Image (tube, rainbow, N blue to C red; front, side, top):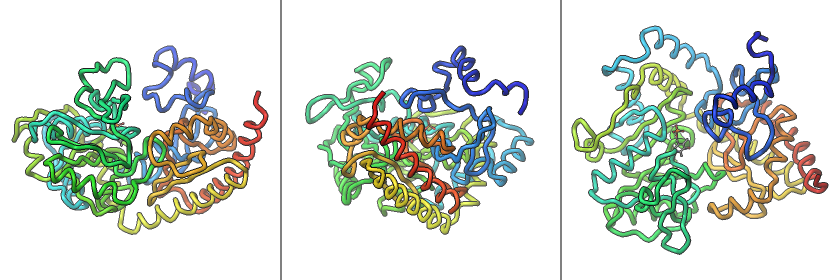
Length: 431
Ligand SMILES: *Cc1c(COP(=O)(O)O)cnc(C)c1O
């Protein structure tokens, strides 16, 4: 092990907390909701990450879905180093950006034009601004428990009352900033009117655990928004090119007005994208009046990584991904329920999550009821001690990818059996 890192996770965490708030650069990485000291990653390959103590974990975090081919895939690594050697950013357009946009448009029915950004947050922020600028309307509707990045106007929670106006979900967001954001329950058709610019939705909710759309929900949302001239935004930052070759809109056969993408399309480098038909997209500057920009947008290293990922993702990849996820989901459901814990393993294609609940979770209220049982932190640590890394929070999903083989899946199920038994014992004998 190299000298600078031989101090271990606890020492790294202490040192980190002195200069990084909470020791992390994104709160989802902190262990606040599960307790304990986070492992600091030294390196990763395929389905595995190795921490600064030399301990290797079978990893289901996979950068929250950003590395669908697995860590350090050689095709991506070569593309990145090749691109970096030619210069990492120019402030002038490149053909890599054109190629990546062409790939997205070729895969997604309804996408004609793309604006690349440096994160998913920038993509959703741009989509909302574009929707307002294009329609001349001001209100936005979002669904409770859906996450669209840390955009001020989208950091809203459901207020009390049926027609819930949004209230700030965090300090620092003023009530006035979310006053035009209505927050409604997922899987229910909201009241809509002609003051609404856009409805933004995760077509499969994947940030409150995994919550599949109920049959008819997305279809009705599509037809009702279309009737009223409201733009429907699919936030596909997770589902895009993970759920299917063409993402969730292809998977469900529903065409929104705008899409946001991120994660998978950058192969683990910072990226995001807003996409849609030319009639709407051309409202963006420089052809239209809606301003949007970025010094590193369409970065040549990120686009090279994204192109390598698109090269590797074929139609057949998705059947393989879904098959692995199905095997994992069925195995986990079996062994965890055998332990006596209440469990639901929702799955849509390759997307899957774990809820410790007696009945299927349909919205955020159900999700929080399940999380409040406090089972996840016990299960998480029982898995981590046995060498399996899940996300350190109960609202995140699992990301089996193309690097998770049959052996990894089988081992995960075996270990989950022991971990579930341990978690159940711990819950029976508190203290
Ligand atoms: C991760 C995520 C975002 C934000 O993307 P960042 O790159 O973290 O800014 C937006 N929407 C969804 C659905 C996400 O999962």
